[in-house]
Image 1: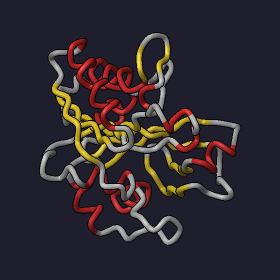
Image 2: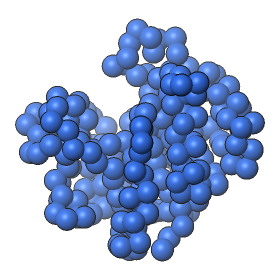
Image 3: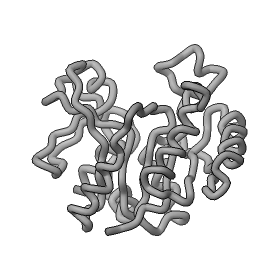
Length: 213
């Protein structure tokens, strides 16, 4: 089974859904029970996967994010944490910008998603079952279709991804796609083959995954 040693946390966005608070504090720095969401997600990567190096994509109010990275380094001194500037062309492009830095399987998590009693270890179970897979995603079942409309829908057949749709008007089921992804370096080649979305004008990460699978 591939070992996951590299993590990527996307902490660059403007967090418009949490405006106006995010106009002066990045959403990844929202504090929950004494720790920022960013801190919690770095810990999640380390404790669940044994990740040794984390690239943090920074942009909006990046000085605050970098300051928090320095704090996290003091708490988790064995983990290498490096900030990397975003592309401002969406998550898929931000991840693709790391091509020269990443040459092995890696986990990506949105820096503003808070996970409570997470079961991210399922990624490892699926990877053990399908060691040749190029991509995997986190999903959760929800009866609130409005949440899916704001994120992305997922159609599965057993463990296999059949279809992903970014911000669907009519979600096909109750599966909500989360901001947690496993990729191999093949991601970078699949990204180059993926056209920009007609709706958003940027390459969507869901479209890249659809090419992967």
